[in-house]
Length: 276
Ligand code: G3P
Ligand code: CA
Image 1: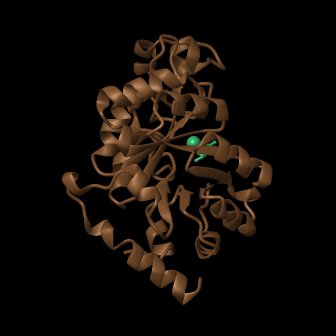
Image 2: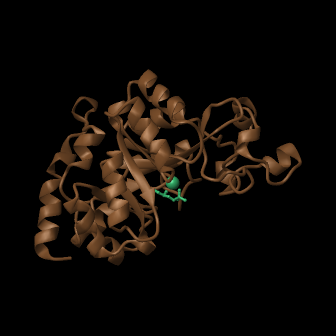
């Protein structure tokens, strides 16, 4: 990373010193800051069960700009924070239900609340529940902003939840399903949104993102060419990248002007980027 880039990053984040709840920046203010934001992917997933309240609370200690989570709907339409469509990998679903490959969308929120989503990661996390989106927002927004990644579920439910909690200005809602983001924007164009993608970030994708009106594109690290960052930015987009866990790559992307680094290593990412 060049000295100029490092200096710009450090000075651009002087506002990080603001920490009390009244001076916390909005999501829109954050995405428009110069420098590279840190987004804690699934909390702190190398040390805590991913997408759990303990993982989010642990991530807060390292002052990420956003904490990312994934949500899907229960059978009764409650947004639940979990990455996979099936419950097997991160819960004791097999033990509880006696079946493999149980889909989250076939169980009620009450049934899902009984699951243990911690023991798969470590015995010390036994009894950690699958959190709702509602409870996760409470934990994350106590000290950061939230990147809400929708894996499944309609836009109206999410937008209404954010409205009821009065946290529309503290989140960025992202999805691979760009039609979902169109619907979020139809319901509330003031919510900051991001379009997730993979493959080439080319002129057609940039044009579609502009037509939708999202401020951010979040692209797969393996597919993100450095030149594409400048091309998207020239069109007025911010570019985030997932999931970057190596300091050399983080610094390369930051020097190329990346706006947001989505990482499993929020515990060290600020140091990689020259931020205090
Ligand atoms: O931030 C986007 C990234 O989380 C998408 O990938 O599979 O980890 O949700 P995934
Ligand atoms: Ca995700």
